[in-house]
Length: 456
Image 1 (tube, one colour):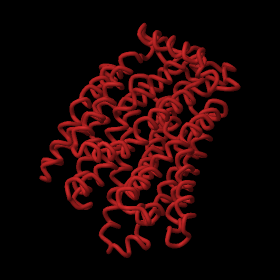
Image 2 (spheres, one colour):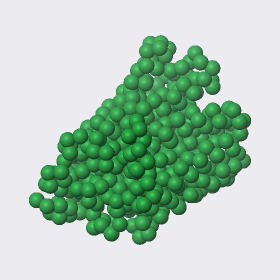
Image 3 (cartoon, one colour):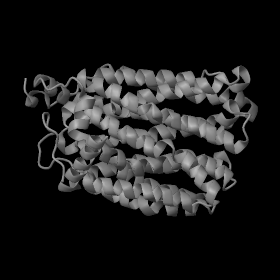
Image 4 (cartoon, one colour):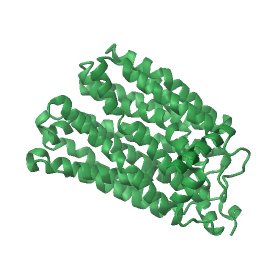
């Protein structure tokens, strides 16, 4: 069997791979969003009731961040199995574990019921979520990208990323529903419903994934006897610079999405004195912008190149946070909606091309591990602590400008990373045996990373 024998999957399999990946991303960000919403709105009262409101909120948001700590471990473990045993079986495992952990959060006892054991159990469940998600996103996009034709990889990969907004939209709709309950019922049992409902999404996702064929490019790797024994070692030896650049490249989108979808709810209450319902009612329609603009970014990338669209999005996220936060200060519904819309347009351009752009800088035999580790490290540096950093900046400075500067700085870093990171040019498909060449500037970054490893 040669690479060409396995690189043309049937259209039915290509579409099934897309649906399976989209469902996995939707579940991931549904879980991400409901936990973030709960940590912003109710977890402080349920799991940290003895703290003052500010401290309780910080502790609650810290449990949100803790899940990201487990992600690198999950990225290494699931990346290893994804590059050793295949994408399909690994993705079934990640989705199943993620669903189980999220469902468990909905069953947890609160502080009033079991005391300090309650936050400990919450942290354990959150760590399990993070561990499973560490391998979920990278593997999900690979199943789509590696099943797709070369000239539609950016578009199909961007469709997977609409699962981000679909999960956010669904989470906010469900949470908006439970927030209509009286406070005593919300705190007694209503907050559990969004977590328990995730089992339905996970069940559908598992059903579709079990019917998938293995990735054709992984089959080609096996046919060439190119499967490595320790992919994580090979990744850092051959592609360490690329892993670092991918991690830095995702900062802009990660910070923008997390602060807009999670932090903005608490910010609206504490700084703008707006109700939770008002903030969610602004966020929900703005989320539809992502669903429209992310595939549009993918289409543009298939025509003009992933790197060009990615850089344009990163550049826009340098100034759009100032526009977004300034419009939020008005407290006027339509102006706040405009702010979210503009921010999400920039985010969509930047994040929409991530699947095709970041995955194809790694060789197929190391792609699951390289993509998962790089993406996960970027999430920790960006998404994980963004709400806490924003809360601290607001407390110290007393205004929103510090938060906007923080978001802009992360976007500058991503822009620079994108300038260094390049896909292989003029190749009919990603190389199976050799890492793609970097641009001259990227080779400099790679040598720098190698020197750092040598010094370490």
